[in-house]
Length: 408
Image 1: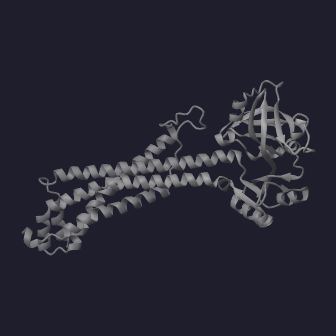
Image 2: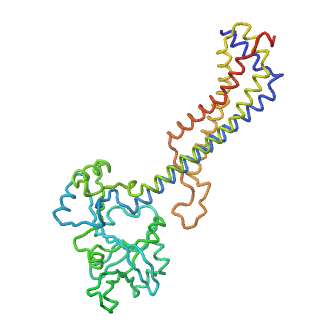
Image 3: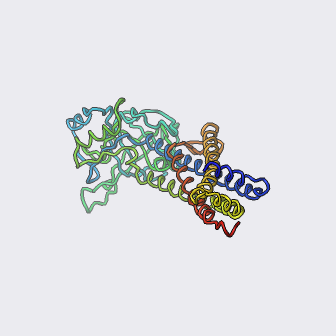
């Protein structure tokens, strides 16, 4: 058997007959390397985008958010809130009242979302990512202040330095009499002092105004009702364990969502896009592997007589098949290894030097974010191996069926 391998290696390395096949094999290896490199880069970019989205949302959203399972709001009292604060792992509990309202600044109007929060809102490490400029307080009961999304501030032409122009907030209400002609009976209004801007994501920037809880409660006439509660998890506890404890305490009347679950639809879309891109590039890689099929087929045609000699010496069909499969594996795995290394190096360069810019001056990050996940390397390797076996099997089978009598 060892003699057969020696003779096969000698014939297959013949310098006189392998020039064209060598070129084709090299092209096959380069094609696999480029396809593998593209897979690594694109998958890493999607991982980076997913991490960026999570980070931006975490800057605005709470680690855990409690909402009513049915209805828009729910009643709270000090005793019930105290029980939630006493749950192990709950560090900060923020009360929230959120609803749509009409915003007016110096005659410019826009419908936005006013989010009333208790004083400990900014203690939850909010706006760590993105941009924030201005004061970090929500004013006082006598002079309540507002933190505006950058988009809201742009649409309303808000000037933070002009303290004489307030932000007016209007909220519709049921009139005392259905026959009233007084328009002031149709809405409640109050004023806020704009003190800061934040920029996290366009979804929040163009819509939200952060205001004190008491101001929002009085304007919207919510009383003891809240639309949600936001929880910051204490150090040493995992979000999952505290979420499980809150669910057990609150029962089925409330939902407790982590950051990912609060934006499950968007994150699911990103993952689906990543999956479809992976499948598309894998299909392109499969097309590139046709070169392996052609090079092995040419090799099988070129070496018919050599294969016949091996078979006449007693080499079984499985040995011939293994020789061709190993040849295909050598081409593909060499290309895959080069592609994985190049893809990893390019991702590192992008991560540290920002080679490719987003081209958006107002973006939170300047360059495309990347994150290398080693499980992606495993899936890419599995794809390359599977494609290689499929591309090499047919030429190997044809080679093993060479008729010894006819060729010799």
